[in-house]
Structure formats: C-alpha cells, structure tokens
Image 1 (tube, rainbow, N blue to C red):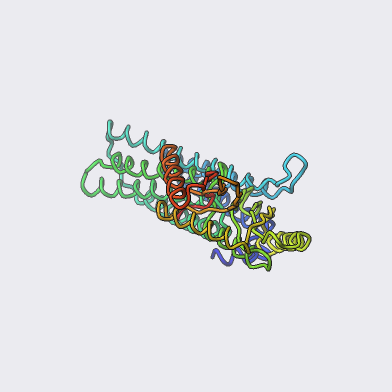
Image 2 (tube, rainbow, N blue to C red):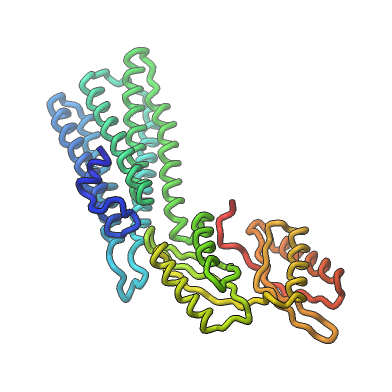
Length: 392
C-alpha cells in the first residue's frame, strides 16, 4: 500500500536526495495523516452519537487533535523546501528539524495526559462497562494507527526525515494507549479487576520516553553533532584519491537540513608541489564533491614535508611516543624548526573528548618528557584539538 501511494503521488520517488522529491514525500505523509485522522474523527463521532457514548466522542476529538502532527509535518517540509535568500543563504532545511521537535512535544503531551488520567483512575477506580461496539471502534482505530505508524516510519527511513519518524512515534503512542484501553476493558469485564489505571501509567511512561528521544535526536543536528563515520570515510577517501593529495584532516560538516550540507577540510599536499597545479586540483575536488555527494566543500591546503628524511624520522618518532601513551591520539601539521641549541617540533595533537583538563596537561607533560629523552634539544610546541568525528 505504501509503495503504491509513493509511485502514484511522488514523481521520481527513487531520487530521495533531491529536495523536491523529499518535499513530495512529506506532502504525501501529511495529507495521508490528516485524511486518516479526520476519517477516524467522523466515524467515532457518528457512532458515539448513536450509542450515546461520551468516551467514544471524546476519543474522536483526540483523533482530530492527532491531525495536528500531520499538519505540522506538512508545513515543516513545505517550509524546508523554500530556496535560499539573502537572510538565509544556506536555505531553510532546518525547518524540518523544528517541525519534528514540535511533534516530539505533542508525543510528550500525550504521555503526560495519559499519566494524569491513569493516576486519577488509580485513586478513583471505576469499572468500565463492556460494549462490543466500543471494542470494535477502538480496534479499528488501533489498526489504522498501526498502518500509519509503519507508513510514516517507512517514508521517514527512506528519505531520512526526522519529522516523519517523529510522526510515526506519535502514532505508536496512540496505538499503545488505545490497546491498553481495550485490554483493560476486556480484563475488567472477565475478572472484575480495575487495572486500567496501572496499565495506563506504564504506557504513559513509555510514551514520554519516546517523546524525549525524538526531541533529543532532533536537537542534535540543530546543536551541531559529530560527523558520522561513514560520511567521514566517504569524503576523506574521495579527497585523498586525487593525485597530489597525500592526506587530510580537520573535516568539519555543518548541517543546514537533511539535503543541505556544507563542509571544510584540510588537504595535505607536498610542500614542493607547483601551487597553481595544487590549486587546480583543489578546485576540481570541490566541484566533484558537490556533484557526487551534494556537499558544498571548502578545502584548505596544507603543505607538508614528504622528502626530507630528517623531518619524516622525527614525525614518526613523535607519533610512536604518542601512541605508546594514548593509542587513540593522532597528529598533523608537523614541522621542524632547527636552532643552534634547540629544535622545535611543532604539531597539532588530536585527543579524545574523554580527556579532562588535568588529563590534557598530564598527556602534554608525558609527551614532552619522552621526546626530550630522545634528544635534550627537542622542544615540543603542541596545539591540542578534539576530533569532529563520532567515536566508534
């Protein structure tokens, strides 16, 4: 069913990296969500009116409010599709994250409401009357919400949309709450036990946790998250595959939406290379990365020594010492400045985030001490850095 709807309403649906295609997916998700919730609202209102059930009509208005998440999803993807302008030169892609954050609050609100209602039922337990029509309506609601959950989750995974994944979780919360209601009615009818309050309390906690997780996952790209290792490998391997590039470091990626990414990287080139040739290579890499990976890449060129055996030997010595102290550390931008009585070894040292300020100072002292044991003239000039890549 999901694939059929996609083929019918999303043109070029396989090109999920295209912003226009992503918008079409978002519009489809929003419209389907609104239609399903409105149908549930109408059906429940009509049946609730004929059987004179306040609970069914109340649940109908709950479905009407559930349409809000679909409306938010719809508006979010439409705003994210707006082109760049002079006030927002990197586009409006982050609107999708803001929409997902709004849906996360709706999910959290469902959990809080369920918690409050369940707690009141524990304090004032009531026996819920068994009504086959009511059970049928609630079961229908669960089935539709289950389909909506899988529908939004599938689309969200396909285009990596946080707002669609959040909408799927919103549907999951409704499924859990309604399922517990059905079970409570059946158990109360069969045994006389009034457990709906306790079961609702457990479910409400799970729903609130789900809302919190959505908010956390949505805030990470807004705050600035570490680079995914797969993306890191993809970019660095591509950059280093070009002739004249001997290494790279300091890759940074800024996310302005799922399809709007800007990156910077330091590309290492031999210090004896013709710089016009090197600049031409750098320009080609930037164009190719934009074409193949859809990432706007800016490259800083770092000349390094590749022929001086003395410099290479000292760099290898320093790296060996550092790895004996901290295996996860790396170095770059290594230079040697010779003096009459002192030899400066200048480099950047990249260490894990787990290091405290005291740990950093201890590491520096150990490295300097071990280096000076090799030659008392050596003086380390070290700049400490942290990696921008997510730890494995």
